[in-house]
Image (cartoon, rainbow, N blue to C red; front, side, top):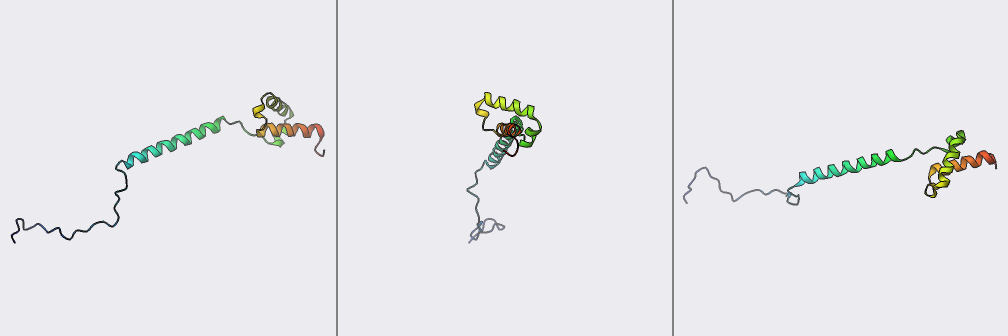
Amino acid sequence: MKISNPLSMPTVNTFKPIFQLNWLPTNLPSFVALAIILTSGVVAMQKFQEGKMPETKSLAWYMANPQEALAKNKECYDNPQLKTTENCVYSLQALEITHKGPNS
């Protein structure tokens, strides 16, 4: 048997990797970048929506500020969609308590 290149080794006993990552897409960095961009967009939209939400005031606050409770109650009465919000419920409860008394 004549070997043409004396430095070449026979490739009969080659090792194959135990875990092959052939299932990973070739454009994985693109998917990661897209996921980061979409996640950042969702977080930014949530922060934007939080800024538009009115501050919820407590029942005690409306009890201490009856003029604000009257104004909020009028606003809630004019707009039926707002009647179930916490501010409307608290303002109505505060007005009921101040007009009827706390023990009635």
